[in-house]
Amino acid sequence: MSIPSEETAKNLAGFLGAVHDIGKATPVFQSKPSFYTSTDLDMQLLERLQGAGFEGIIEFRSHLMDPSATPHALAGQALLESYGVSCDISSIVGAHHGCPADNEEILSSQLSAFTNNYFQVHDSRSRIYHRWQETQKMIFEWALAVNGFESTEELPRISQPGQVLLSGLLVMADWIASNEHFFPLIPIDQTLITDAEKRVYNGWLRWYKTAPRIEEEANDIISSFKRRFDFEPNDLQVKLFEIIQCLSRIRGGDPRRLFG
Image 1 (cartoon, helix red, strand yellow):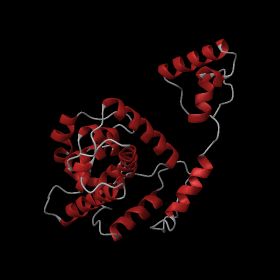
Image 2 (cartoon, rainbow, N blue to C red):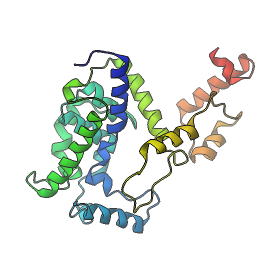
Image 3 (cartoon, one colour):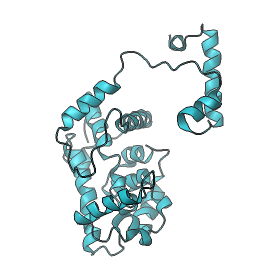
Image 4 (cartoon, one colour):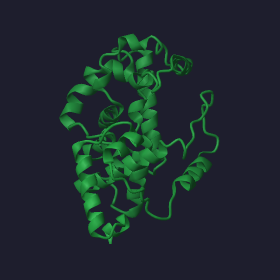
């Protein structure tokens, strides 16, 4: 087990960032329709996968068991558990789009009950089963190596407050890295990013701000939410908005003064 240190914490954060979407390396995710339901785009992507050795992926959609049972965050948590990663780390991956599943649920149902979703077929002796399995393990081992871990055993154990902090960090990093203004999409016919360091540097410059972001004053949270997100806020979001507005008036109207 690693001795707690700033370097270990940094390496662990990097590992979580590198491995958090491993659940997308599954046939159930790769065969999902695109967000805008572009049939041509979906077929191009499936053909690329088929050409890369994932045979039968085009016909796979008709063999899906239950896509909603294996969302990619949960799939990532399940895969990490199968590699021996302790639940204090795997649960952070499982929680990056909501909340993690408990350990018993993962071990008792995921990989065994929804095998097709993870490996395309039930037969563990099948070539395509091994193709998915090897790809997933390769991503996991790469995430370990690039962050200074030689094996699962070197990953540190994390306290519950540490899990909360790392979950928040991972969620925010995921949002930032998914922003197309910071990190533009690559062309469909491009397989590699030629200069990853430059891409990260440029994305950082586009994102980085020297002062806290202060939103324009919004008196109507319902219309503000609908304009920005195209849906209405839930009860908790409304209540939080009302508290901030109230405190802002008490502290002189400047949201920045709420924290000092």
